Image 1 (cartoon, rainbow, N blue to C red):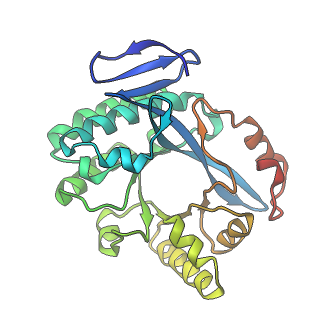
Image 2: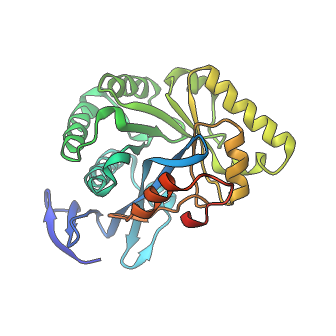
Length: 283
């Protein structure tokens, strides 16, 4: 992908603008691109894309890197600035998403959150990015991965600050290694994303399906909406829909697209075609 100019300050971490208007983040020798994956909601006999999750796609030269591997190698002292840079790129690139579905899930790593004196300027910058991208605060979902927080009190204050700005809160990968119901209670999220591997295991049997439905119902009674992610087959999509989950996500419905992406056909298909358990036009 050809780049034309630098944005921001020069140095080891900066942004570069591509000829198509999108931005990439540069972190030393690593180039990080944005990708967006639709999040769907069941609406009557249709499954409709209503939001997009922003995903980091790091490269060293032409070689793609595993995102988890890339982030795990970043020094804790640098993680906050790297994440802020990548979020800036994601929000700027979200300007290219369909206007009627310009709702965004953005990832935050709990280990990158420390004192309020450091995160207040970052939140001010995020607010300015959202204004430039014409995204309302209520259309931003701040997503926290299922990792141990190094400063739980700071994380709690950070969540308060996000809510004060009108943002929604989500916990990602519930059911993975660090899942903690007490932590869910402390963060009081609006949305919980169920770990894809957990969901696929449960959808493999009737007992598992019943247990997954129970989890979804438990969160619903607490006023928390669920996303079942990592869906890889249309059978999994249909079973996940029957659990009563509010939202669905996975390659079976739509894979991520590198920014700027072209979701025109996806949006049109969701409006025109009823859900039949098999959505060939979306594959």
